[in-house]
Image 1: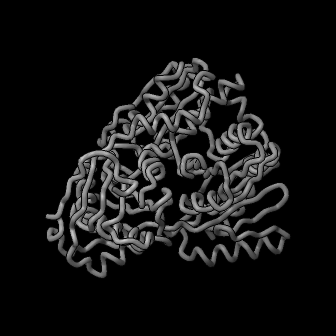
Image 2: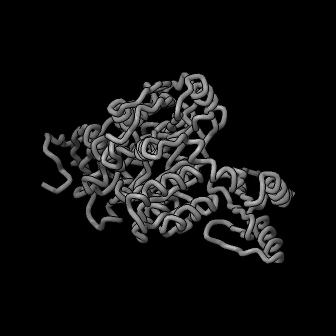
Length: 479
């Protein structure tokens, strides 16, 4: 028995060998970081089956082994179409002879944990993350829970399908595994549960996977929990499961103020990202959250390395360096973070978009661990979240990410770089173009999927100075 095959009764499925013919799959569903599209129009059961087959073949090539020797994890979120599509992904994997470990309805990070902890060859999560209910898709990882990306793996899946899959060998096997308890035990080890004080916390699950994934952990603590939109429901009766959009945070902000709560926490649909509202009802920017989480982890791991994304506030690097750690900027995107964290042996990485990565969680992103760490930090410092954030908010004035539709992104970036280089700016090309002066800086980068330029700017002078600089750069972008 291979090391990934747990005890159980695997089911052989040789009949899948002849079921699958050639299916046309639209190329636009193969994105920079995952596969995503409208259910029925762009992704249906037949295309899911083809994707499952092609994914197995790509993993086999990466592993240098036949697909019949592969162990692949499979999970799904709460979307209405997920049970059907997850089953079709499974049939595609089985058709290629794979052993499938099916964990059913889980949060995405639970699948990452399965792949990492059981040393599987890869994993497929049937999810459309934070998108509206009409969407579906798949997040794909290889051994080590390292994601496939457009540059490495996802386009290979597209090419496999377009070349024609041919007859499938069949012979795959599957088993059902419940990972909830073991995952929750692993996540709980990141904190001292006894240190958590009886804080009042409003949680908004967005009718996604946060309720079953992290709910039992929060109930185990001495918290006064106010649970909202906590039951998984693919109809999303409250609001879309995307807390980055201000309109989807309005309910939580109002509830935190109404309840006089210490904290509000919201998760996206597949619950691998969490977002925070402080005790005053103010949204916590991902830059500042990264700095606070880094502070918490460096207290336990002095001198460690932390990655932060190239768009982030200088608050992150300043905080890490003040505490004796090493701060390294990184390209945006989870594939780049997870790979470099291993290279640098970084303990933690944070993106302004709400993705937070942990070395001791297979370098995967988690929506559970940041919530637990924040509760621990508030409890051990005895401070309100607004107090912890005040040194950042009063010194670092950030624009947030601003998107502009443009016709020629590359030409605009070149023009911006030349303009500010002539003024003596330090120029970086880690991701897009970064322009740095002593008292202000910005990054402009192209969208991976749309004709957009994305601007993040910061002033260390004042909010009005940030406004002035932001408008100046936006005028060049939108000229």
